[in-house]
Structure formats: C-alpha cells, structure tokens
Amino acid sequence: MSRSPLAAVLALAVLACPRSAPAAAAEHPLRQIKAERLVYSVRARQRSGLVTMNIGTCTFTLRREQAGDEEQLVLLAEAKGGIPGFPYEATMTSRLRAADFQPREFFAERTQKSYKKRWIRFHERGTDYLKHTHCDVPALCHRPAHRVERDDGTRAHCPGCNDRAHYVWSLRYRHRHTDRVYDILGPLYVARGMPIEVGGAPQTIRVLSKRDMFDVAFTAQKEGTLTLPIGKIPCYKMVLSATPANDHARKNEEFEGFFGLHGNVQLYIDKQTHHMLLVRGKVTLGATFDVEVVLSERSVERLPASTP
View (cartoon, rainbow, N blue to C red):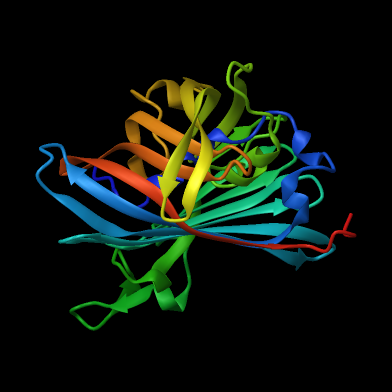
C-alpha cells in the first residue's frame, strides 16, 4: 500500500489523550485558547541517504464555533506538497464539545493524488465509521444524477466512475463501546492537560482509526533542548507502545498512525505547552523514506483572563 511521507507529522496525534476525561478540569490549557495555528515543515530522505527533499507543510489550526446550543472546538489539519509524480493534498477535521472535550465527529479527505473521504460519528452507544464511495446499489437507487447515457442511447445507473456527484456515504463499521474513544486528531489537543514527567507512570489512551482500535501507552524518556526555526525549546523525548484493542486491529502487523508513519518513531514535545516539536519516522511510497517534521511557526490567540 502506498503511503505519503508528507503528512507524517499527524501520525503522533494519537499519543495524546486519556481513556477517562480529565480534560474537563477547569485548568486545562485549551480553556484559555481562542485560536491557534501551528505550521510544520516536512523533509524526506531516501534510505540510501543520498537525497533529501523539502516536500511540503502540515498546518494545524484551532477555532471555536457555535453548533446549535453547544460550543465546539474545531480542529483542522491540512497537508500540502508531495514528491515528483506524487502530489499530496489532504485535510482532517475533528470536532470536540468545548465543555468537556467529548468527541463529536471526524472527517478526513484526500484530494491529491487520488480522492478519498471518510467520516466517524460519535454517539452515546459508540462510533460509526463511514466512507464516501461510488453508489453501488443500482437496483435501489433512483437518483437522476446517478444515471448516465449508454452507447445505445438508453440511460442506466452508472456502474462506477470518478464523478463525485455519483458518490454516497456508506456505513462500513459500527464500534460499540461506552468508554471514551478519540479520533487521531483530537487527542493532539486534549493531551496538553495531562501530567508528563520523566520517570512518571505511563499514560494510556484509546484511539480509533477507521476499523482499528489501539491502546497507546506513552512516557517521557528524557529531557533536553531542541534548536528549531522558532528558537531553543526545552522538550521531552517520548516513548510509545501500542496494543490492539479490537479483533480487527489484532490482524495488523503494527500500529500505524496518520498517513502511514511507522517504524521506530521519535517524538519530541514542548516541555511547557506539550506542542509537538519534532517527529521522525518512516513511510513507504514505492521506496522507504525517512521523514523529519519540524515545527516552524506557531501563534496563539488567548481568551480574556476573566473567561471561565
């Protein structure tokens, strides 16, 4: 399976949120953030080490939005760039209820090099995984837009094409659970309220990616300082391990994060803010690439101090 090196920074979003919900604590740092923007530069190097390429950016933004009678945090991740012959463009959106960070829904869409779109709905009985695919029920579908003219001049339901007007949402899997489970983007933000220290107890989270669930444990291995485009930042180096949490995940050979980042992943986070600073890992796109993702820009707009 082809995996894009561009969006490797997103892979470590899965490391970040507890199975329970300490996120509701009043002192959680997200409660004082109105808007935020983090930009990461992505570089890839072939395993031979002969060629290093700047292959694009990944941008994370946070904003607040009213949805009916509740305020939501809208988290958006955008990846743009690619390598010659493999352009890449994708977006992922996670919505959390601002009051307690309960996940509401998750969308992921890739438009380059090919189109893919998926949707995860969260509800009190669990989660539903849906995929946007070509309508394949011609005997039941009566949408005029799905009918095409054949060579003999008659019209019939399209058997399959790339016209997105012929695509529908298809339910692929229902997960049934009562504990809190997050998509692979939301935890990146919720994690900022978690206690992290060298020698501390591992934190365990449950993460859902399409049909797979994993329990991911992570700890701070050591402290250090990174010199980045935004300056010298005190940091933690993190260590993680993943355990399959459902039968479908047990069939996979290894835990795989956003867009195929795998192998011996290295993650460094800001000691104060818990922002991701540097990610190293491997992706496969025909050949295997080593990927390095570096935080290059960040800006935060805070709410007034009086905001509860």
